[in-house]
Length: 414
Image: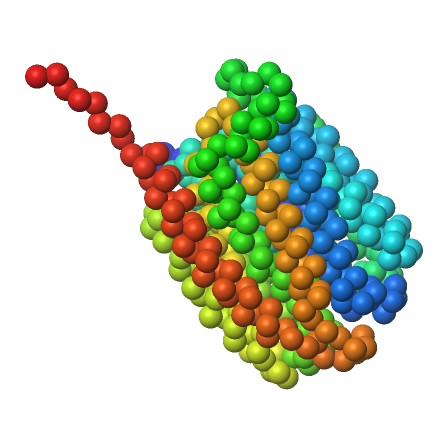
């Protein structure tokens, strides 16, 4: 009889973390399709819209660094609940915002709490699951990105068309409250890491983790991982409507079809990442994405079927990069440093992503809300170069991980 890979409780953990991640990703991703609604309603320029996206990233990055020293000193379930409640409050504030300044503040508050949750999720995965199956776990958890497209974005766009751009945020709050209740009742305490002796002072622990030479090289490698999404995604819908000439009514179908394929490919990529090799999968996904990004960002008016096909291929590359890199990076920190490492690593990504989104807002030019975006092709070239650099940097990370996992040879006395 074939042995089960995951126990019943482990399957529950994967499911609830995936759904929780879904609410986080949806909160971020919904900003992109709401661009055509937000920008004219609140009289927001592309640079200001980029700043709204960046506000979440910057605040998430800073709060992650501040929380890193405490991340390994508490039950991870309690930390998860604290920050998730704050995230729900920030999202509610977004739904009640009536001006650009209020929305900017709301996104900042949401980022302060929401930005830390991702690192807690990955720390929980690393605590519970062995490296040999983490690709599979990451594949399922990263389905949150696809699920947000299949379920969240079309519904969010429908609500936005029906009741205004505020309504998708209220929807996220309602779903998140249900998830919060499930976590409180059914998720067991996650505190095995507390049995390992660490620095008592949180700031000493933070400094020790942040100054680790190997960790620093890893943080440098992950700096560019979020560049593609943060530079392209905030203006993806605006580019599709104004440059590719896609009807706004076709956007839900575009996101749904892309999301369905991503949901199917996610677990398959995760399984292949465990079997074929995590860096090999990362390399393949990076090359694929690099080629598609250059093609996509140089398009003019394009048939809907071709846009859908290119988006499916591009998100396949994104999924391959994300799933394999997260599984590979989870092998780096020592058990006593996992929470702090994940927090700092997530913060580095958020801050670099925030800078990328802000820079994208400066590069892209739009004279009126209904005119074409200019210089979007430049974003494509910048993203392609960042992907190329990341391939080389992740190679060094992979080499170090392989050395770390290699069996130690014990000399035998003659």
